[in-house]
Image (cartoon, rainbow, N blue to C red; front, top):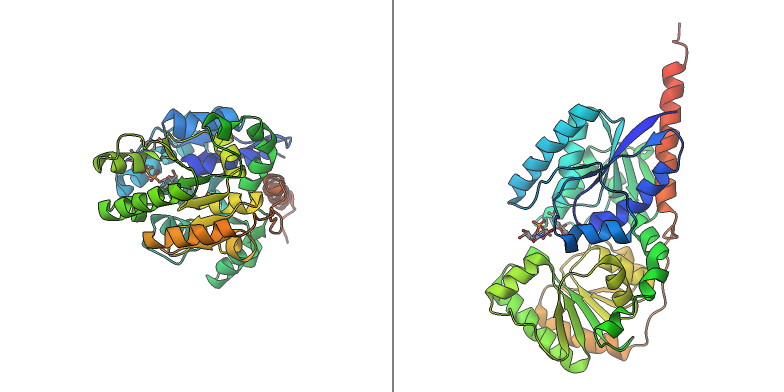
Length: 376
Ligand code: UD1
């Protein structure tokens, strides 16, 4: 058996999803799994640190696509990844999540009739104003292996008429990374380094354009956070998009006292911080799942979630998009006892191995088909 699966990473949320898959693929004799970084995220804090901490191999190539308008960024990745495919001709391409590079690379491969696998397939927020929702739908429509994290994702794919044979419920590879690295994260003493007492602070992350791009809305959210900080200390690791918007509002000076503004954190520091938080407030996708796995209450500042399992089987609550909902919901959450960790089906630390073995099996089958005598 020999098979080359080009594995694509692009932006911060991809790294933890892909690292366990790359590792599992490389452990299978006969499989080559080169790593392609599209360069959508490029800062050390948004990219480099994750390679170091997740012990991910160096990318074989970096396409250096960088930031830009959606069309520009997507087009740049499409063109550069197509050149990579032309030069290397892999047997399959594996993409993860829902960022612009996910769709661009899937499209480049599909146009060359190279088979595409999508890690974290089938999630749907049903809000097409989210760029990620378009990336999810389009990527799934042209993928050959749809690796789903949960049963609701499988149902979404079936509902879109996708052939059952392509759909594989494998669990959550991001939770593989969480389980693997939690002991190292807990040793980092991150809350203590910020002067926070474990289980007595809130972590806040915000980066969705819908929350941070409108100055009035961002100001209202920051006001709510100042009020929240009167209840318990709040730490806010700030995404570059949000940092730029906060600076434009004149929020450049780090708030002092109980509202701590900091740079984006590395994987281990953030995991440690989340694990010992009393409460997390976010608009991220992945954090909704990580808090479920850790048993930490999560309030999601969005109208919809593509991850309903974190509400039905986890610790997540959808707040809607009105910043006035933050304070009452936080009060309510703080009045409740802490949650226990939840483990939705197959969020068991082995999703990466399942994905790798499905890909390896398919190659064996393709090999058999190729070597089978032609029917007469
Ligand atoms: C992207 C993804 C989003 C994901 C998020 C996580 C899409 C459509 N969006 O959004 O799904 O949740 O990443 O972070 O693909 N910037 C830097 N340094 C970097 C990267 C970005 O300063 O390393 C700046 C850019 O210049 C830009 C802003 O941050 O001003 C936004 O970056 P961009 O990659 O366009 O989108 P995200 O908001 O990060």
